[in-house]
Length: 471
Image (tube, rainbow, N blue to C red):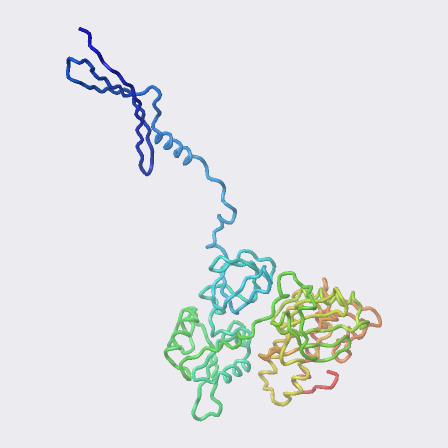
């Protein structure tokens, strides 16, 4: 008897997925159905691996992943390899507001990383938020515990009389300041107290001494390994002082220093950015005005009269001033040379010419204040000598006084850069007779020694309180 069967073939594809892989499998399925009418219907199933089944794709993907892992990564940019722990870290002594797109704003007491030192006056820095830009180097100081400039109570460039003036302006019990002493390498602690018996308060000056173990003290009973520790202790205990230290004087920092130009290598200024406020004085070569740059920074604007000075002489003086930057020299900000009249823009000093200042305060200036002024000028002239410059025209009329009563040397029209510390002027050249040394009279020979002669004559007359009209 013949049996009858019905066969059907199917292909089943299975997909298995998870978060990390995917597998695909194909199987051939055959269905066998007995269609004999004399028998009960029976169905049988059989399965076999399809010849065209695919290898699980997870294997392919895993191999691919392994292959990617073994492939070298692309090189990182050079800055990624920089070790910022070895970079110079500084702290801002003053606020500085960016004057252009390449500048970085500084906030007092915040820390910054120095990336590159473009020149002695402008550095590239990075703040804590990753912003980068140029900053003036004289607005920051190295951030170390031993660096006293990071503390608000330390005022470096002030003398005894200036410290007393600051303390009396503060006029609070326990006001104090730490400053450099007149003795090199010694620091002085100046303290203000409202004593009952004294009118206007009492100010005491204590030398901070160091013993053979390199421990610091004001009173020998109390020794400290560092000056900040000494100050911190006396802020809670008088321990031999007239009073305990309560209020650090920091007003000396309210007047931020001048920068070498308004930005890095940007000496040519646009006259439209200058605002003229009032006339300050007139001289042989032009008029000096008080003004503002971009309506923000007070400046002194020297307008050169046409025909008063040749353009070559003007540019020579300007280029010379661009090379100079010191706290005791009047700082050049820039020049305007692309159109007439020509302008020289410098920092503005509130108390004006030293000669007029001395006449105004004649008989009222203490010996310490006069000596402090001499020291200011001496520091500025020492900087010129160290950098091979001769001033040739040092006098009170060529010095200016700022709001903190600091004296700065100005007027570099006769200044010269020399290689061998000697300059011989041409015959017939004018020179200041009263303040010139003998070799200038006889041989027209200038040097740092002739500048010292002028400085000595200037000191003698100032201490004698003799201020002739043509001084």
